[in-house]
Image (cartoon, rainbow, N blue to C red; front, side):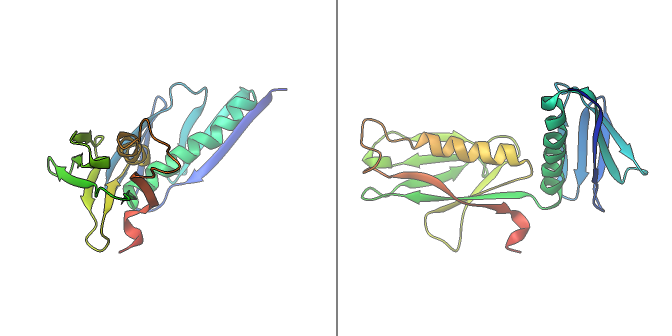
Length: 190
């Protein structure tokens, strides 16, 4: 059965401006600007109460369409926390015998992984746009990825993780690699 109108609203915090133009949501805050395209969804986006709330409507929506309302609001909340706090992923270099040598190049936008399982091959991973990578000063063998867009930060972490995939060995025994150890926001430690 189709519901005539399903809608949900969300509050926009102070210091953040949200613009909606033809299902493209643009969020601007102290850390920068992020945009998200929702054209593939059959939803209506509207700013109400003078830009203090965002309202998402679905007219005559199926169960999938009404579920997309909450999903789109979650995406906008991720954009808002990205431009206010920023996202930080921490990754640990794990090795049993051959120490992994990770060097950061290209002004914190690229990482080169050497000596993985004693191999001579240099594995190079470029960070996605807007993601910075650097070594942790406090913890040995820890990488820190910072950015405003949670999807780009997590995808960059996944690219690093996939580059250190152990092939032709028993992965229960060979646990070497670079793994995500912590997910959070940049402002958590400050």
